[in-house]
Image 1: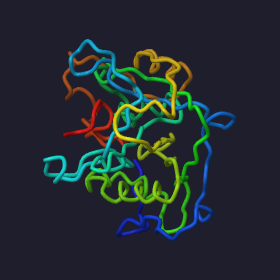
Image 2 (image 1 turned 60 degrees about the vertical axis):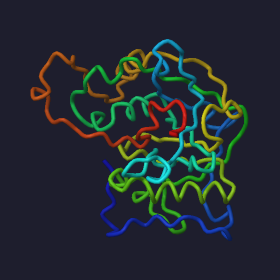
Image 3 (image 1 turned 90 degrees about the horizontal axis):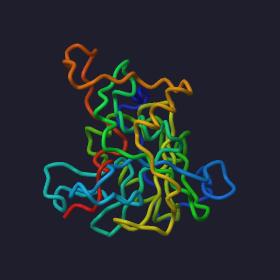
Image 4 (image 1 turned 120 degrees about the vertical axis):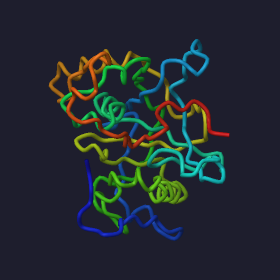
Amino acid sequence: MITCGNHTEPLVVPPSAGASLSQYKCVLVGPGTDFPVLHRMHSTYDSDGTTLRNPLFYSSAWTPEDAGYDDYAGGRYNLPGSKGQGTCNTGASPVAAIRELLDTYAKEEFAPSSLLEGVKVSTLRLKRRLRLLDVRTDGPGYCAKCMSDVRHRDWGYRMTQAWAEAARELGFDGIISTSTLEDTVNVYIFGPAGIYEGDFEVEESRDALVVYRECQAQGMGLPALFEETEELEEVQGTPSLVSDFSDALHATMPLT
């Protein structure tokens, strides 16, 4: 798990309105780039249990006042739902999507197989080139490790969500960053809240367990699965959930 040991307070200063895009490292994704497709995990069905879930969902960040909860809601770089904005949370590779699904179990020796049940991993092909702000390395006003710091989960992602909003206002189409789980890269595409088909087309949707097995066969270092019939105490550790995508994983529509 990434924790920045260099800063007592996280160095996460959002871009100012007067900043120039040229100050920041930019990565292009889409046709003719290193990232023509992205990968999103999501529940197979909507809450009715019969309607297939649309993978092209942009989830939002919500303040306690808007959400009706005690804490902030949304993933690491979700845009504000109060403004009708959202973020499509994806992995740069299939294994990145699987690791976010497994949460901190991705760093363990074993993981419960139930985490992969009823979940699809969809390959999303970008229709056009998009410009992402690359926070995998340090830049003006921010530390890369601070951006990916696991402790943002405890802080409700308030700082990183504000950072994402500022990046969008500056003209970026999204953010690319190192996962707090380390080793893999996540891509966050900005857009309108809810189902939006302007950026992607769905190339395929496959069962998460099938994708997991392929990643295992390729030596990606994922944990072995155990059945829920086993007692959790028999498995080393019971990690808490700290996925960068947070409650954006299973979201279908914005909170109301």
